[in-house]
Image (cartoon, rainbow over all chains, first blue to last red; front, side):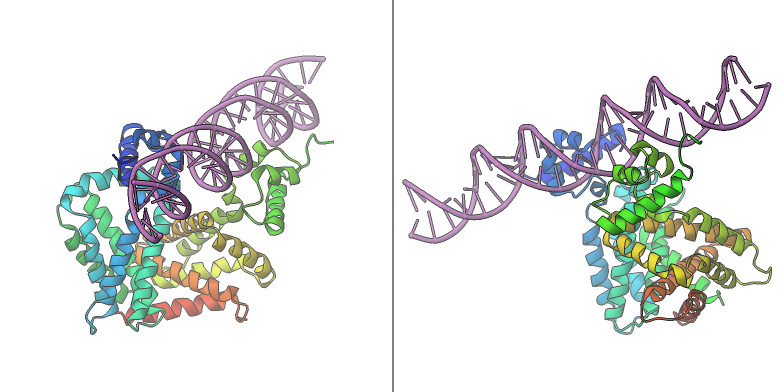
Amino acid sequence: MPRWEPNALERLHTAAIELFAEQGYDATTAAGIAERAGLAKSTFFRHFPDKREVLFFGQEALNGLLAAVVADAPADATPLEAVGAALEATGVAFGPQRWEAVRRRQEIIDAHPELRERELLKREAMTGTMATALRGRGVPEPVASLAAQLGDLALARAYTRWLDPASTSAFGELTRQALDELRSAAAALG
Amino acid sequence: MPRWEPNALERLHTAAIELFAEQGYDATTAAGIAERAGLAKSTFFRHFPDKREVLFFGQEALNGLLAAVVADAPADATPLEAVGAALEATGVAFGPQRWEAVRRRQEIIDAHPELRERELLKREAMTGTMATALRGRGVPEPVASLAAQLGDLALARAYTRWLDPASTSAFGELTRQALDELRSAAAALG
DNA sequence: ACGGGTGACGAGACTCGGTGTCATCACCGT
DNA sequence: ACGGTGATGACACCGAGTCTCGTCACCCGT
């Protein structure tokens, strides 16, 4: 018999998501999350650096994926093509069956400035890894940063469209579309 | 004889900056700032929504300036030209005599993730106001957002160069240069 | 089989950011 | 003279996050 039930981190994560849905983000305390998971408050902070981070679980893994996809793009791919491949790769996190959960999560984030800040930090990290990966392909500055920023903007636009209940397109289609729009807009900028 | 010394907000601001320089950001408490300013802790939070905000004092005023400059740009100015005018207008905050103070401030921010988050939130607000002002000029999406994002990237690059001790150019010159680089990079993207 | 190290956890004290309430009192208009 | 106003002080309170210390199943070498 193990001394403790396994999967403490996972239990904390699901307990937090449940409580956020039941009581809202503000009303749920870190101690409350731990209690629901059958753990102590100190254990919560052993697994998550802070309460906000629960909602951004798995983000680092996505970053690693982005870097790999950009690095592994065909040698003759343009920077924007490599970025496009990376954006489509993010689609693994946005399958149709996850739509409801992703939407609830985003509603919480949008309603809390401290979570919006954290989201921006994560996005910046993502953009930074894409830019670094592009430089690793030999793309010079400021082209690498620009392409990464364009990718970030495209991803954001695709994401909000995907979250729009009126839209029915798959995520990959939306990223391609958004990046295409931005590419032609950039060409027309002057 | 007034019941209290005037300029409470200003005194709190300078007290905070002093203490940050003397003890570092973490080691100075909100109560300590208030004490140095001859005020109570509760008064500190009456003037600043939180401790981080002390380091971003005056940001909203800059946003208003940006919106005005973009709106007042010549009718035949391209989106990027309007953005360029806005970037140069920010130069009022970055005169040569403020270099040292701005540098110290940025060192504090760079060393604290919670302050980097706040900085990103402010930058997003700035980018958003530029995009809104561009739409007010009749610039359609996604061109408006793209031009604003390009401006944000240019401003960031100009800012870090301005902060580089090896550089001697004035801020306005650096913004023009950075925006030019990005414009040609965008044209070459594909 | 035995014994010491390891590592995940509980318990609880502690600091500090931030909120809220209530009383005070110079100032201002009537 | 008098009541309202508004900025402040004093203080209680909550929750996030840190830190320390003790516990004990598990593992690994002997």
